[in-house]
Every structure is written in structure tokens, then in C-alpha cells.
Length: 96
Length: 467
Image 1: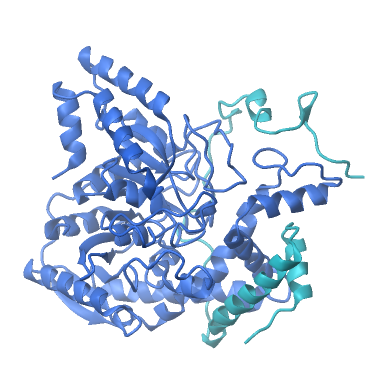
Image 2: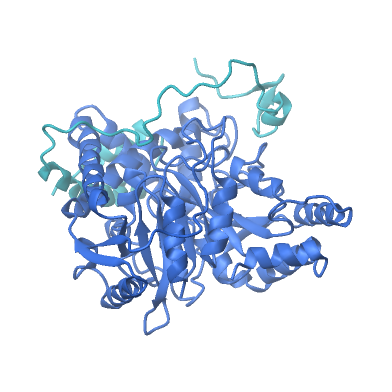
């Protein structure tokens, strides 16, 4: 069965923007190894001449009319959903 | 007998009022609080809407097909009057700025949303134990799980708090709790119902459906919520038209692989009895084989986590939802917000998704699963060339004990064995009550049909009835 290392779990957490505690990493290491062990069975299937399916509706290029819409929600209503604003903008920690 | 028709009749004729219906439903919700089926009640808004409907009726105006009928929605539907939490700390205080299309369509017909039902956080789970606000207890036995992820919706209907509830079904989340609580659960054809205003989980299999006590009620609700929506480009033109007289002598395939030793003997017995009832009604039931089904859970737990990791990337603490305090950098804000806001199962799925999508593993896992999905769809297509409907149990077992499977995610995933196939193929599937175990736990039979055969499936189920 595939074993995933502690470091690999930390790397996955970083890719997933999850800042985990060491205990959490240990537990997830066990769970993720078990899950990967289970899904590995897919390798037994011969799919060499099979195309992948990404969606099942068969719909393509569904357009709406090209008209401007606010979705009936105004800016202040949306800004009220966040905790930190400044001058009608959302505030985040310094990036650079 | 339709409970919805009964209520609409009573409210319309003046022998009851919408207010009385809403007050009675809220009273029932309060007396059954120990089940933890509902996370919130939108009492004030519901009563205001009820009064407006009663006024309309008094004036002799058309108040809609569902005038005065109370209902609840799973708490991943955006609705006014209460927060939309997705049973997570991430969205604990989130007040929706808009309503889901499905909720709007029901309200346009006079139905009244009285509250929000519990679920596994972000609909990740099959027991409602992953709710950040505690598990929901099974309606038949409070030591057992409600099933999930629409556990609260199923229990609210089973306890008769409301005649119907909305749920979401990505891999069995309507059908399995319906089976565990002895109610009807409908997962429609992919694209039948708009997902606008519903918290996204896995976009290629997410569907919206309903849980009811009778098949007639499910038919009525599906008829109203189905159809094209400009805000959800995956919706199909409305194809749902209730079927009055189902096709006689239908050919029904009982899938052998769902009836093996891994399935509880009492569940198998109830399904065989259901098959006998179908035969007695003039239908033909034959055993069919679908070997690829045994790999469906593995496909599902590659494809769905991949889509989950993408859909849940939006919860970063910036625009809405939980925000970690005192973060020094943006990366720390994201990382701590997500660590604090998600439950363990959310993290597992996001990380599995990141893994199967990462370069080096993409072909071996994600691409291979999507190819296997084609094989699965092909297997259904071949069976539907010869059969009208496929029959399986909904779940391999009746409701299990609270805590019993919580420590082992793979064991928990295996409870989805029979429900994930129709999800990956986009097929309509429903859970119909098929009796009980000796211990009194409900068992559900799953009927699966070709795409867009939703109404025909309900019509077939209606002729057999719900036990």
C-alpha cells in the first residue's frame, strides 16, 4: 500500500492553504495513506482506448444575453459580509 | 395520500391558515429539538410570509400550488431569515445576500421555509456526524446516525416537522439518509434543478432534490423546482412532467453486485421483497451484472475530492465567512482561516484533491478515474438498452451507530457503494421505503433510470407504494 510521508502531507497542506498542527498532520498522514491505498485499484482497469468523461450533460457553450447585471445585489451589501473594510474596499494583510 | 395536497386544501378552503401550519411546524421543531435535525429556525420571516399568504387567500387571489406548506432546506441552500452555515464554522455567521433558485421557485408557489437542516459540514459525509454543530439523531433510533449528508432534512421529514425538505445529493446525500430514516428521497438527473445559490461541493455531480413522506409529494416538489435557470448554465430545459399511467410490464434489472455478502442480510431480504412486489404488479425483474460498479467508490473518491479542492478554494477569509484574527501575512490569513473553519473531513478531501490533481499524479489518479467513469457510463448504457429501470439497495446496511465508523474514513466511504454510480453517470435515482429490519430500522430500495426518466421512475414507484 502506498505510504505518504509526514513531509508530503505538509506539502499537500501548503498546496491546499491549510496551516495544520503537527497532530493533525500525523492523523491525516494515516487517513490519506489509507484512502490512496483504496483508490489505487483504479490502476487495474484497462482504459488505454477510453476517453475521459468530465461532464455528463452534453451541453456546450450555453450563453446568456450580453446585458450588464448586478445580480440585484449592491456593493455595500457584499462588503457587509467581510469583517475588515477600508474606504469601500476589503482590507487584507500586506502582500509585498 | 399527499400531505402537501392536504395542507394546500385545508389552507385554501379556510379550514386552516398558513399561519396555523407554520406555527404547528415550528412547535414540532421545538419539541423534537433533541434530534438536532435543524440548525436554525426562520420564525419571524416564516410567520410574516404566512400572514401575507393568508391575506391573499382571503382576498380570493391565487396563492400558488403550495400555498401555506411549511418546509425546511438543508443548510447549504442560501435562504433569507437565518444564516447559511453549511454546518461549518467557516460560514457560521454568513447571512445570504440572495436566495437559491430552488427556494425562490417554492416560495413563488406559496411554500414557506421555516428553517435550515443539519448536514455534514459542506456536505462531506454520510452520517451528519461531520457537522460542526453536532450529529443529527436517527428518527427511528436515537443511538443511530441520521445518514448524510442531508441527515437533518431526512429526520425533519421523518418526524413530520414538515411535509418536505430540500437536500443536495453529490454521491448519495439525499438517498442514503432517506433510506436510513424511512422517507422518500429523490436525486434527479444531473442538470434537472438549478444549483444557483447552493454551496458547491463537486460541480460535475452536485444535484438538488427533495425528501418527502410520499411519492406524490416528491412529484409535486420536483415539478416545481425543475427546469432551466439563467444563473446555472448546466441546467437542462424542463423535462419533468408527472407521468399519470406508468408503462406496464417494465423490465427491471436487480444488480447482482449490490446483493453480495457485503450487504446486510436483512437489507437483501427487504430488497428481494420489493422485487417481488414489482413482479406482482406485472413487472419483470431479472438479475443483472455490473462488475464495474465495484470500482465506483474509488472513482468517486478521486473525482469528487478533486472538484472539492477547487470549489472550496474560495473560503479564504477575505470576502466572507470566518476570518482568522491577527494574521501577519496573507498566506497566514488563508492557512489559519481554513484550518479553523473546516472540519477534518473537509481537510481530508481538499488534500486528496490537491494530491490527485498535482503534476506527477494527475494521469495516474484523476485522468484514470475520469476514464473509468466513461466505462461506468458505458455499462449503464448497455443495461438500459435491455432494462427500463435498475434496482439495488440504497445502502449496504441500515443506519449504523453514532461514532461507529467515525475513525475510519474508508469504511465510511464504502457506505456510498450503491449511490455513487448514478451520481457519476448523472442518472436519476431515488430511495423508496422498503420496510424495516427486525430492530425497526428502515431500509430503502434504490430505483435508477436513464437520464431524464425521473418522472417515469416516480410513477413506477407510486404504483408500488411506500411501506
